[in-house]
Length: 163
Image (cartoon, rainbow, N blue to C red; front, side):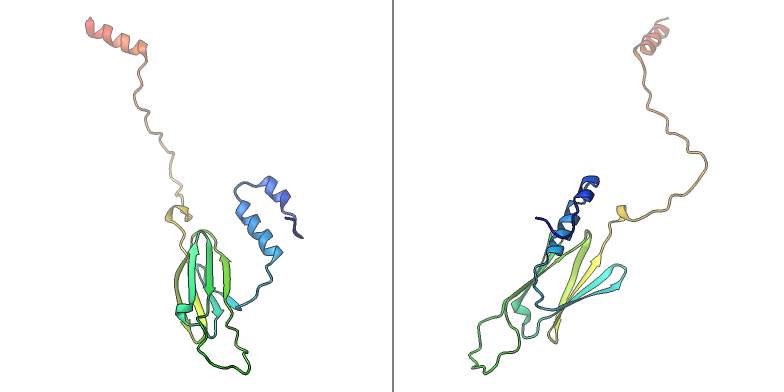
């Protein structure tokens, strides 16, 4: 699939960024879907919040799934309550919103209040991947190699034992 952006020069000169380029190409193509509207908020350096306007939906009608760096929010309205509407202006159609999550982003909670669904996210970088300070010290002494004896050394040792 070709888009307005050509990432092939980057694909040729990088290793391991395939998922990033796929995501960029898919977002450039756009799906045209803008329901329900949402806000993406950066709370601090490692915390984010997604707020989605889901007026008319109850918590039991919304499903939130996080699977392999994708956050999926689905809304399915339950059956009608038997009201005879003259005009229906509040959107209650089913929806599905997908968000691509970076590595190490975890969903920590969700809350539905006043028609707004708030989903909290946090970046949890593993300890091994965090930057660490390397102290500069004196000369590093190499660890002694384990004793390796050659066949000649073993033969000389046996001769000295026999003498």
